[in-house]
Amino acid sequence: MAEKHADAGCQTLLPVGESGVIDNPCWGSKCDCSLLYLIGLIDRSTTIILESEEYIVLNKPPDLRMDGDYPATVIKLLTYWYPPDSLQSPSANLMQKVSYLTKLSDLYDNEIRPCHQLDYATSGALLVGRTRRAAGIACEAFRNRTIDKIYLALVHGHVEIDCPTISGVTKEDIVNSIRSVDKRRASKSKANRKKSFQGFQPASSIFLKWKIFYSRKGGKRPRDFDMMCNVERKVSLKEDLDSMASMSWGQIKTNKDWKSVFDDVAKTYNDSLKDEQKKTENVEPAKNLDLPAVFRLKADNDENIFYVNASLASKVDDFAMEIHADALKNEDVKMNQECSALDFKVAVTRCTIMGR
Image 1 (cartoon, one colour):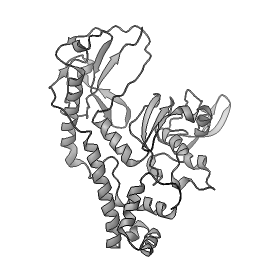
Image 2 (cartoon, helix red, strand yellow):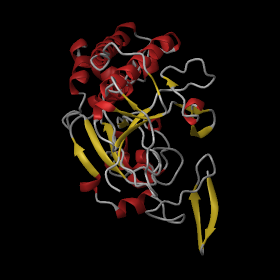
Image 3 (cartoon, helix red, strand yellow):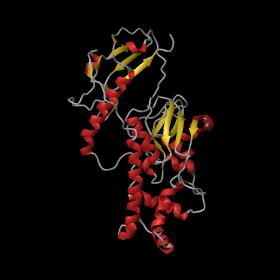
Image 4 (cartoon, helix red, strand yellow):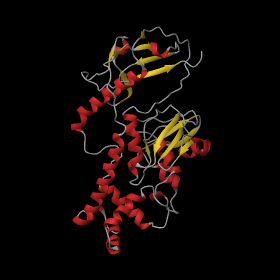
């Protein structure tokens, strides 16, 4: 979708999101907010904070969307810097091809997977998995709240907090209580979920990746090299491997023996990933806590530390989140809001005043 837009003498054809929004980021303008323009402003060596075989930590620029039909997004930026095999043709115009991407699934072999979200205006460290497996393990850790996230905000005005101080409760008690609620919620919804999970790879995906691997032997060793080798350990004849590499997944499915090869490799991979994710699910017995909307903990012994307890829910067809009414009335907020029509999730934020 595109729209003719005129602004301060600018006449250009701009990509517009499904909502009709035209971005006007702080690092550019309505006329200059393309991926090409953004890349010209940032230094890759400082924007990529950490890089390993499994993960990337991106210092996300402000006013940049994660994905969607917009001129520049996190997905487009990462795909341009870390293009999958399908985009590495010498004749391909990489910038042009990446500009058409709106979501991860637009490329079947794009392994880049952000492990959490940062809002459009928020800058800072974004953890990205370089494989579905790595992303699946990290996403599960975020879901189980075994990872701490810290935000720094500049606030205008005077921060004077008049709130009760709670005795006999520690930060660890709050974290364990939240995890306990999350675990109960997950158990109740398990029956309604598909068999797939974060990082899950069906046999068809493994087949497509193996085809690329088989056709490019001698090149760069892929991160999932062991999984690709598992396929070839199960097929002894090179003639059979050559035949498989020339087929589509639909054709493979008609051969029971060959389909079972990819089914077995997928099962081994997915079972191993599940075991890794289970390591993040350990939840200690928790106290049943109903806490005020704003409070301090005596255990912190610091007047500059306070907590905001406000359960949040997503509204249908609305980007904004809704805060539970108990928090707005400054009443005790129950850790479990399952009786509500909206799907409220517990959110307790620890705030530290760094300076005044």
